[in-house]
Amino acid sequence: MERIPILKMGPYLLVSIQVDMHDRLAMQLQDDLTERIALTGARAVLIDISALDTVDSFMGRMLGNIAAMSRVLDAETVLVGMQPAVAITLVELGMTLPGVRTALNVEKGMELLAASLRESDSTSG
Image (cartoon, rainbow, N blue to C red; front, side, top):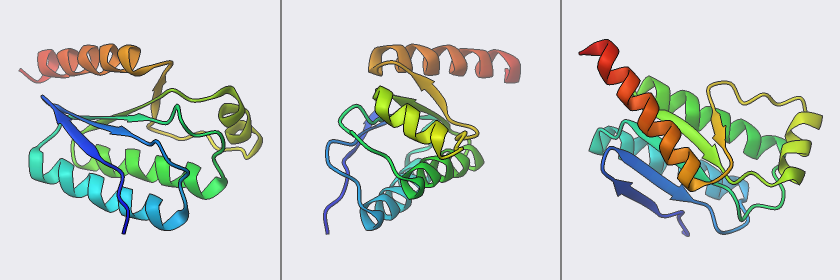
């Protein structure tokens, strides 16, 4: 079965979705990602969807679920690279993706996560 690669970069996990997502692949990503968060103790997940031209309601829910599961495992989620057509579709479907923060690109997403982790460390330390 095909899998989406999950890269560990310091306290982050980086997921770059470069293929069209079908339901089974989205479910596999959810399982693989939650397992990797628990295994590595990653504090943040950055998901790059810049290669996706379309997102249906199932994929939107899966992204929301991934963020919720990550939060339960003490990791933040940032979604980057959303195409305008994908944003329009999500809004038209009434999907708000609670708990999912967004950034325009990977660089901005990493800056957002770094700032968030610094803030989290300063309030818990």
